[in-house]
Length: 237
Image (cartoon, rainbow, N blue to C red; front, side, top):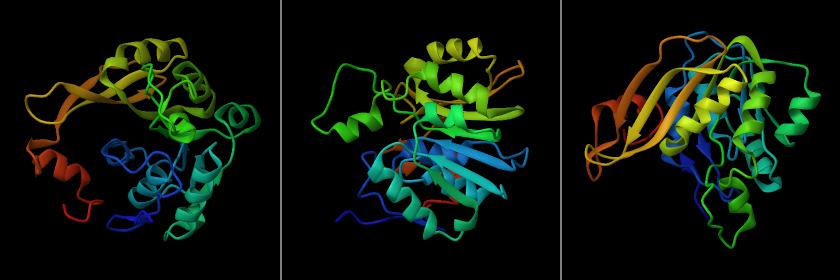
């Protein structure tokens, strides 16, 4: 059996989830701004629940709702929430984003999402893993439309996507009056290409603050920036 992934203040069981804990989620959970002291948070496509748990650790948000469509991942997420010290603030809905956006009356101060984004023409033998990884399960346009409905007027939407999708995603977002105000480009090492874009959107157009994060100087030699960003979570940082 796959062992739980242990962080400094919580642990995550992931044996039921197609998508295991990866750098993307930890980066997004640590980078997402809580400067506005969000009262309510929505984690779309929560998987193990890691983003919700990270935001429960980092913020005093009283409402942290997660949304997960896959049966096994939903059960695992609920279990991870119940075994954490913040169980009273965490709740997972078992529904599709479409159903949820149509039925829920509430809006959120902060929405966070690590969406499925393998739009390349490759599928694995595991349908569950494909559902977690392919954006045909949650197309970007559908995601952005739902976010525009569920986000309060001065709220923040924080997302991580492949760098090659950034231009298309930002262009799509503008159709729903969502505009980037912070972008973090992530590189594995100083000479590698930009791999990921972390983007924070709001309904207000503003100058975009752009930064670059390099994860390693060489294999297993992490940069100071990366350590500072993730040290509240990773045991060995």
